[in-house]
Length: 149
Image 1 (cartoon, helix red, strand yellow):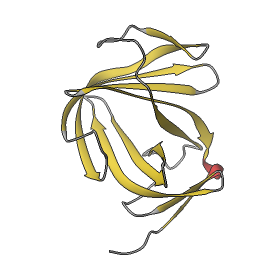
Image 2 (cartoon, rainbow, N blue to C red):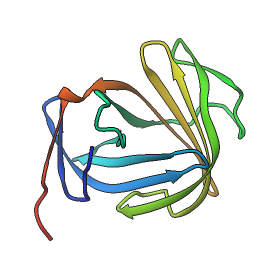
Image 3 (tube, rainbow, N blue to C red):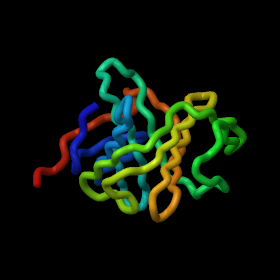
């Protein structure tokens, strides 16, 4: 899925504008997220490099859980056990408007629970940030070009 800053992503009846893009480069892969904004509502959409992927991960920032970095291999949250699936120090690149995040190194942990639920923990110099969400079928997302600059 290719998106650019200012593109529009329709999701569950709401049109979100792509405000910024994050790339987390780890030794064995790169995780890319688009920051989507509609009024006060903010979501993060994982941008898979695979054209064959029929699902996408949609995340929202959540209040920080009572954890320290590095977090344990299993995290119990919201009635679910999340198991560690990905971790490492990512080299982050930021394009556009992504408050609270900037380019440079950032330890990252990605967890997965039953029902295709995900938890992402990021350890930034100014504090830990957490995202939680689930995978959705790509048919629930429509990407349209945004207004030109």
